[in-house]
Length: 608
Ligand code: ASP
Image (cartoon, rainbow, N blue to C red; front, side, top):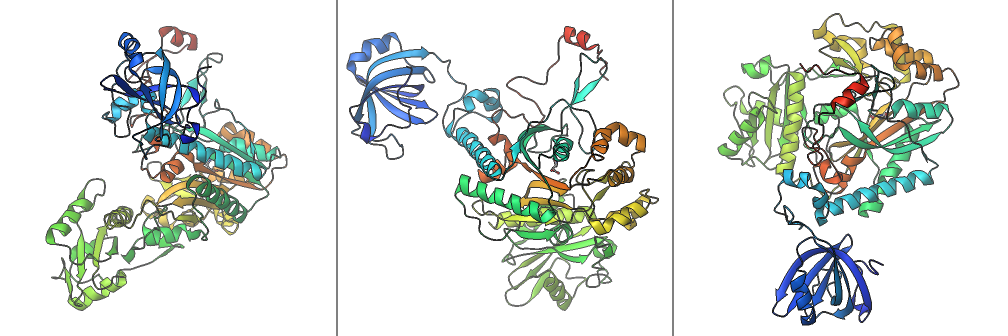
């Protein structure tokens, strides 16, 4: 028997018990004739006391950091208790010890505040995983996993595995491909998600499916994305959108309760995609705080109609506003006393390439009722007052205004809002705000290809009263500049995203389940009937054999864990993550392969 107890469970109740422990040497402290050792395992740390009688043995077999040690000894009360440790009341008077394995000196300290940098810790991830901070994240991940499984199991969902070696049908992200030795010249793709399989399972009658599953997308890695990531992937038959929203609100609330002991009793806010864009400038608003965007002038169309024509700001001779497609404002509460230095710094902030604006206009709404602005020259005080009011500002607020092309300005204003929220402490880590964003557009305009692409994926159904618009209009975009005038731009989908504190944590849709409509959808995306058949013939075929109405959702498991763990980084919650260039620095992957492997695959490399 290697151990009778773990390093985290002994307490004052166990005094005088004889125990065997095994673990890693955290520290060795010698005090004259006696030696204290902190022994660590997954469950905690227990202090060991080596008396004088073991000195000769310790001299012969000195202990070092991270040695694997087994000891026998007697639990005794500690004279010098440590209230910060669950085992802090006791120590073990060691009677015998065995070094089970030695350790090289670790490249960084295995402590909460380690001295190891990011790269080093990734290279020695198996050591990093020993640290409490990382272990807590991995434990939290498992708690989320367990909670989700319990909830889904209780609601009749079945975990059914779907294959990883599938057919390449890129749409959206790029596929990772795997050459087939047995079928020379042919390739599998790794699934970007189990989407079509879960739909086929619905056709097969498994009306509630789930899987906590790896997905693979060969995307340029923006900050904090992983080429392989995990989804809680779900699908249900005989459901409408409302059924899905209800079921998965339950799932998330259950996870909150199980993992963080949070009773999320309030009704989850719902917002249409248009309102999210209109009021917050993006489709995953952080609603922990207000500071909504005021549209002073905008090319954004709501329900197809152009809103905010710019009456308030146009014609004052200020070319920046007059010539801008879009002018948007937010009111930062209580910031009217910002100094010149602070407003200059904010101006520099919006000029950063990531934000990409030319400048920033401000209006200070002074507490004495006066207004002061960087564009005083063009706007009289009553005009400034009217603009400030339109921006929802109160006395004491600072109105920040951005102008430029619609898309960039809206995005920048959204970023500025988040930044001001952060600076003003309005994005509290201990506050959780869930939100459903509904009624997404069915299509998105792909500029490079001058065609429509599916905003969610091609299996998402249009709103029933938008089906006609899709069927009766030619998808071809005659004039790229006027793509917003095309009827397709305003078709809405039965699609929904769940947003938590400004992060999309899940998304899904009610699916198309009739062959004819699915074919129309493929055609709308510019696919010829032959191409549709080649890529998705299996699904179209299946839809001919009694496909039930169905819909589903997938949650980003890594992201959900990170948010619940109060971290920005999903990497912290993945046992063996890749770095920002998609490399596993521990394995040194990707790497080249042997010539023999190329020969077997009948592949010749011809790197450009
Ligand atoms: N498969 C979709 C995705 O990965 C989610 C869904 O529609 O269920 O985004």
